[in-house]
Length: 305
Ligand SMILES: Cc1cc2nc3c(=O)[nH]c(=O)nc-3n(C[C@H](O)[C@H](O)[C@H](O)COP(=O)(O)OP(=O)(O)OC[C@H]3O[C@@H](n4cnc5c(N)ncnc54)[C@H](O)[C@@H]3O)c2cc1C
Image (cartoon, rainbow, N blue to C red; front, side, top):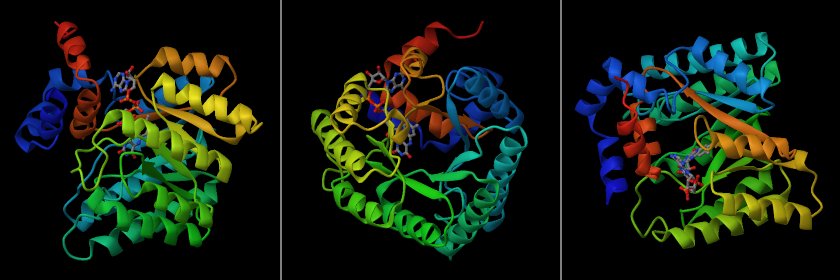
């Protein structure tokens, strides 16, 4: 299974060290990563805005192992929010709680909570928004706990539900009851059968069920997918419910299906581009290859000479 091999390689530390430090690796990563610095990401966000897209910035990094790194990640998210606001761009960031310390062995949850609070407060002051990405299932409970706690403080914090998880329908009800905004995705990690649906058609069917429920709950849901079937189903359901196109949005990843991103925008649908940047691009990049191993052939054929 090439996708499982690629997911396994996404966790390989030696390959990661080599890829992230090599010039070739950095040039290849440009396909899905806006650049290494905040300036690169701001330039990409400006270009997206000029094309009519909303954006969210993700300073890549995950599974930090100590408090200093976790605090630095939170400071970086605050700096992104401030730089976006200063340029009149969407003060909207996506963050990972393992980047904020959740995976640190002692006191990780509290560390992540403090860091999320710092970013949530600044987002509120700037009229911005913080989306907490959903990671592997061992972090789902803690992620929901921290997001619900942050939301109850009045900070503009939302999260993500993964359609492949058996538990997501129940989690959706918990989040909807509290008015927490949800981004719906299919799910990007390797999970066992007792935790996640393994069959792609069944994941798609669950995505559609959750999508319908989110549209009915009406809390500005985001449908993050490049799948034309999912997108058409969202549009059809929105028409049935007579929902205006500004009551929800589509989201796609930087560099993926740009044609479809423009097409949606041309037809008046809300479209947000997720812009990742930073030196720690390797795990993110490998998950994108795993989603579509054909990308690997594409990249190899177009290797910079
Ligand atoms: C904005 C955004 C945020 C996300 N946040 C999270 C998160 O927090 N947690 C999480 O687990 N997952 C997240 N994901 C990833 C998500 O779970 C899926 O792994 C990913 O979106 C691929 O699924 P798909 O819905 O696009 O459909 P798929 O069924 O994978 O693909 C449908 C079609 O989309 C196109 N496509 C899909 N992926 C690629 C690619 N890499 N390159 C080129 N074409 C492609 C192809 O045409 C493919 O046939 C996010 C995705 C997006 C778009």
